[in-house]
Image (tube, rainbow over all chains, first blue to last red):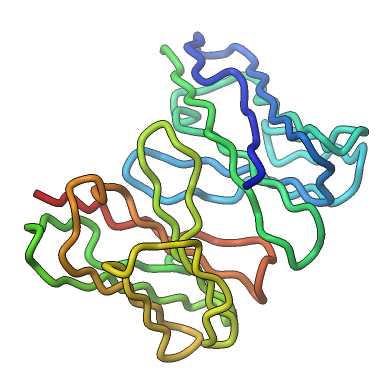
Length: 111
Length: 112
């Protein structure tokens, strides 16, 4: 199946720092989603992107749909301890097709 | 957020046991999914149901048996599992098949 590569695999940052992570695929996607998973919980949808070049914010989170349609980026500004968790990207090639998930970026915020 | 609920949250079972996982969604969605999440691996799609009909079985062993009695409920029946089946089992739902999915909290399964 389609594989999505997320980087970095893990991050350790100081509280207050900004965070950047990305997700790349070998094929074109028409939808990108970003989820966050807290320990012991299921993934929660953060941001959905539907158009190449789209930039969407949700509070301190900003995600971008890459113009090549083969990548997406998630930025978190001024990180806080509750940002800790695993961030997953998911991509869909066409409406009605399966979503594929990345392996996740584990974020640790040091107070 | 109680849109998608799963029970039990934790389950320990022996290899000869039979158990069932339950998922319920209160979002008015028509599609439901089972995923397996193992450490350091991407989410693995197991089954998809759309309007109560199974539309995808991702080569899942027969020791996992899904059941979808209506659009709001989804079960995963477990029988003679193996230790490598230990994982977090996530249920998700979406308005229709392959639209944005909303996940439950998962059932952490340990097979001894």
